[in-house]
Length: 162
View 1 (tube, rainbow, N blue to C red):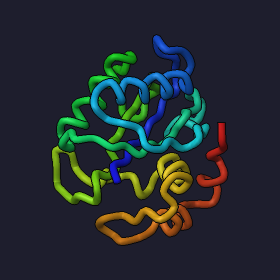
View 2 (cartoon, one colour):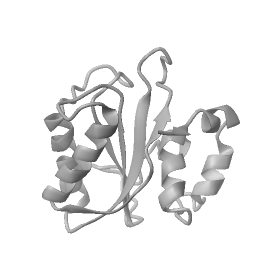
View 3 (cartoon, one colour):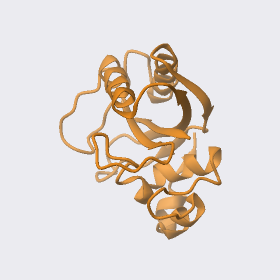
């Protein structure tokens, strides 16, 4: 199972963040990554500065013949196409695409797989649980439900369906 996370908090050439995510999914298909499932869109407070615009987040399951590095390059190219500027970490952005898991592959990178911070991010785990409730972390062996349960309740409750 190949999984990516999508997120955005400011408008792009495609429109507001939800429209940007939808347009980015279309671009993935044109680049050789075919969408099998997409979660609902969720609204998540910005971190570390909750006064920044909230994020719209989702997770998609893909099918592709692209190797992990080529898929990551495609994700970065799509981010750039939609106006992503890499500046301060965790800053508001038009689009963020992260490769979460590539068929359970474990590698130090690039890209590092599974994504090194995915198991501590509610904005990834909530949509992931919706489309792949039986997914398990390839390193820890913990299921997505256990990872979600380990997060603070306030964090889980702050993530709402868009």
